[in-house]
Length: 311
Image (cartoon, rainbow, N blue to C red; front, side):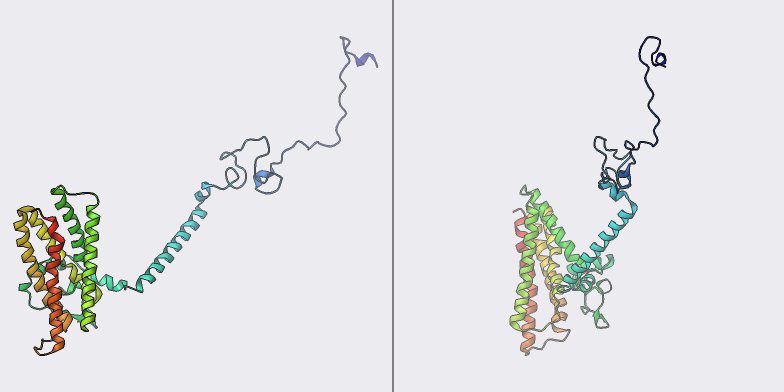
């Protein structure tokens, strides 16, 4: 027995360990972290083990912490889109309600209901009002006909385009005179807006002081007061071609035609189409009002364009 305990070199033989009755499970990793719950790591990699990142991933998302990859999920992306659309619709409804308190959007849309034939006829009417005879505005169910169907109806499309074009032409005139700077366009826009608001305020103050009852709406007055920019643009372009002589000639004709247009158009707005009575005090005030509103246009045209023409 003792001889078998040594090998042929005289070294003691290694004794085999006795067989285990139960399996040792203390070193086995069950990877509870991959389930996103349970275990002590709570979805984080065990200490000493590198983060598997996008290849393996711990928890529900790569790196165990939801990041930008969460929006790649179609369900989450659809929910975010629906939420954003609902916020946008609520904001639009809020803005519309606030605007409706001051200006009706349906009324504003009426002034932009124009087409190309109307614009061409209106421009011709502004420069040649002498050839027009019927200045009345048609009505349908107590509402005025849209401008595209009624040339005598005021619109805001032509005034808006005229104001923008005036600002650009003013910048061109100053640029050709080497007086242009980046702030010029902003100053021209601010000046045009301030003088327009001041003009409308003066007209409303005159109506209030004289106690004249008219059918003129605020947007109607805005449209009529802005038609002068069409003549101002033509006068400035003539000044570029024929210098100051062309400017003053075209400005004089544009002013005269605009006075005729304003007087005949506003007469139906102020008097309702009734004939003036010579000895009526109310109609005299209306006549003075018409002359004041019409005569104010040439003065404003000259004031807003005189500094843009080379002497």
